[in-house]
Image (tube, rainbow, N blue to C red):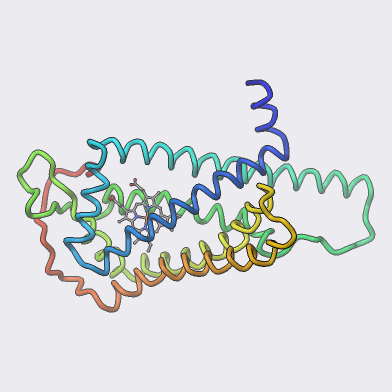
Length: 249
Ligand code: HEM
């Protein structure tokens, strides 16, 4: 246990956990994007997908998945930010001792902005989950076939359509999805490097693959608000009815 804790707190340990949780989160983002593509199939398909998430494994998938995501996002942000602060402190001390004669830093712009893009993504995530997962700020609607049953299902599709027809939210999503691509562009490559999976012959290939994956994910998420805003009628037809229930379904 002691060894685990001291590894976790070491510089190498923090980088390792940041990389490992980051790779797991990339896995989640891919699955999430695939699920969100049901939006192109319309009302029924997207709500069926939301219903599947709600009821899979006798209702156990969702709480387990959400707890795992909380640990992953929280752990990733914590180790990444503390490693960044540790680095910065180390650099200030090294500078005070050695006073280099104005040499250029070896850090790139994208690696320097990881903490900023990460913090913006984290803030977005809090708003996004409140909005789309818990329906905060939206009138509550449940799917017509589930209304009046013991398990009313929220019309997730309708929430997404309403959100993406609000210019402010549409703009926020577009901005954040570009930042997501930028964050992943450096993050995927850096994580592979930290986990020691990059051998010299694979270096260039993995670098390109990481960049391609980041661009594809950002584009995939960008297409959704643009499609809804330009192609989906904000007035419906929706297959849901107002509900006074509220809550997290
Ligand atoms: C256009 C972009 C996006 C759309 C349309 C979208 C859509 C959704 C929807 C509809 C839900 C609620 C699902 C439900 O209640 O059944 C949701 C939840 C969630 N989204 Fe997104 N999402 C987008 C981008 C992202 C991004 C970029 C991330 C992460 C970096 C993310 C992370 C999450 C998380 C963590 C949840 C909560 C999962 C849960 O509790 O089941 N989303 N999203």
